[in-house]
Length: 500
Image 1: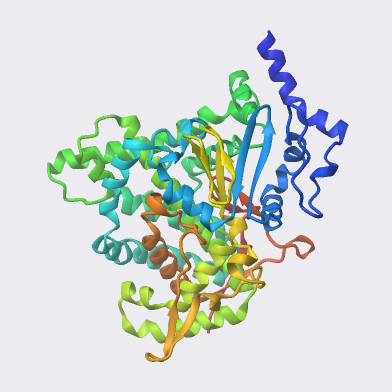
Image 2 (image 1 turned 30 degrees about the vertical axis):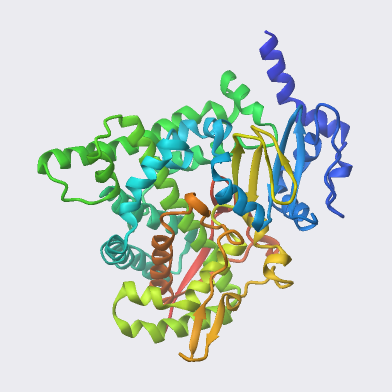
């Protein structure tokens, strides 16, 4: 009875906060850290700013001399958020062993990701990363472009866009790009074609369940983390659905695994060199563990590239001079005839994609947990068990990293003139100032594969069509929503116009 009453009290805290209306000091006019009260810490301000947390944290970091702040959450819990490249380097590389996923984060993602690579630490993580790395060599990347991406592009995506332009229908381009990326990751990762991007745009039970599972899991990282456990124990709210949606996700992953096992038993040889075949051939017999691996790679391959492309197409539609430069480069480079080399040589397009992800990163914030006491380079003290997050979204908006025009979409900031060769040259930012693909030992294995896929999509689409966003109510910009990965709230409705 006591536990149930405590649970109800916690669930009614938001109502208490509203009645007290004690959040005046959490307003961000001068962006000072919010007032911390005994026991509840800054919980009031965290609640009031929860719906606008990305922008709020960004302002706090922009106004912090060290681009880092430490906040008292509640009880004895504190957490740290940073947009300081030196601190990012410290937690992702220099003192990497101290900053892990940690038990708190792993517990919140356990139902969905289990012990998959994106929810693993230590030897488990090393094992999965070592086996996965074989799939991201140059030979695999070329195969990925030639046999998977271009096939999906030419036989599925382009015909759907052509029909839409002919029929003058409105498409949710975010949904289309998610379907495209989902088919791609299943083909290259598991040798399985889910046929999600078909002209009928089939409603897949898995896709709906996957979105729900990601959303519910993301919500657990809210201002009152203890509440999700209580809701789960009582079977109320979103937590009442988590087991069903995760069950649907895992059933789909199990279907892929069972089919792959049948294929391997029939051939008795590893003719297929996809990621799943490599894991199964390593001697893994724990089906749950293999399922965790499959789900993790679906999350990475489906949601990140589609999120990046969604915001990219929106940005270039609102910056026609950038679109013109990309079209000019496409015309110049397309004479090479080789999709792989053509994509790699497009430096302006590469710069535009980097610039888009600077402003709208597919993973807006990532958090680690300290397994030992530590002191960050800026002097911030970290205690064992504290969460330390690096705010990728805020880092793309820091003047000290990008200059006074940091709010502008300007691909040229990534380019310089190579006088000797008389051409533009791409100049990368160091990975700790631009941790869009993480950095250090956990740097994204699929970075080059992601760029190749995105470039082929952009080239294939822009050569034939102009993507025109539908006007939104009151002319407002689309809302950037952060779950485990980013989304455009309400989708990305567009009309597609065939180029002359």
